[in-house]
Image 1 (tube, rainbow, N blue to C red):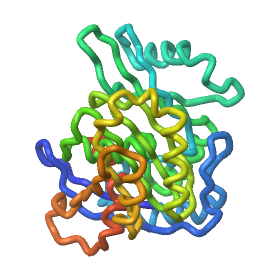
Image 2: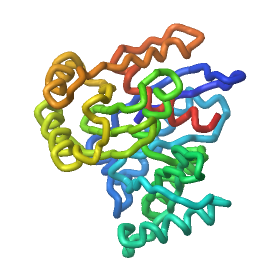
Image 3: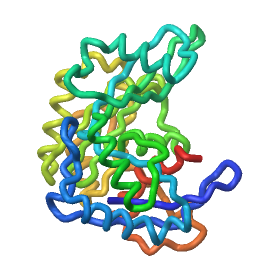
Image 4: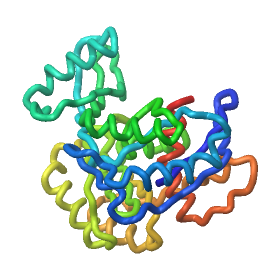
Length: 288
């Protein structure tokens, strides 16, 4: 569990503090169909332990869920969506053959880009209503409210997109703990994403990315020219770069988030802890 507190000042954000907490095994099991929190009491204790020292009376929370807790689709929409409600209905119709009909879903979307003709690239996120209601209820019991709910991979992208010149075509690989997110952006637009749980070893990561490239690589136009960026909180970053260099034409670049530049005071965090807070910062900035 990771949490940060930000203060908005003009067009920038100041990092007030950040906290990390490892949950006991079995407390949380990310799942699309079933409620994720197995021990509500311990989870509430964890929320209070990380948030109470940071909140300063603020109750709004931007929550970044594990990717395994929901579904995400990239959709191109030709018509202008006049309202959020209309947009949801249009997207449900376009994805009627892909959305599960046996799970009540809460849907939301983010417009990633819009071209001159009005065509929009949209990221649709869906969470089971049972899963979502459990997270919301537990946050309420802890004294907080979920103002925004999304997924960790978009929190990461949100952090880097305003701070780093990625180029037009690029691969963004996120490896944190036992989670792998692989994203490909074409002309600054997300065109492919895949999330997997991996073992704590480079071989698992290499195998999953190679599998994605073998199955979808031909659809990734411009991949041979694309820059490759790596964000990880694993300690063997250079070894990871060397392994991934065998999969891409360009050498992978390890991203340095430099979150200390956001803080008015020195942070008592290790490098790994700092990297582990990037997604939380990106998610929190969506509230600003």
